[in-house]
Image (cartoon, rainbow, N blue to C red):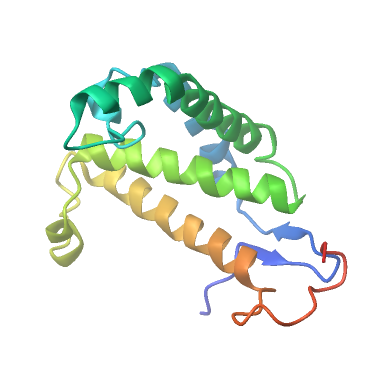
Length: 170
């Protein structure tokens, strides 16, 4: 049985969503779960708020002081868009880009908490492992994020020389 594309670009430049009800339930629930724990000082969220300068703690601290709130606001906005459009059947490009960013934040937070490594991809995690459901969710979010990226890039000309598809800005 072929895998159904969950997200595809329409001829009008918008994006069709073909998600199952249980997928929509997940996408409605996860943003509020992350929002509740979205504390920039939480070490489990270090991938969402990485240090700007690894070799210069003072500069990194200054960057955090200046930019941390903007980064937090951006994460919150993307989560809001995902949550509010989880039941939509069609999105515009800006909304789908917010989905991409929200899915990325969710994966980073979950992956950090699970301590995901390359080995976890190579060696299947047994279903008896207590982390199995969360790891399956992590993989699903990655797969869905891939669908978003493929859909966003579907109309792009790699050389940058073609006219954009109808309905897209030039």
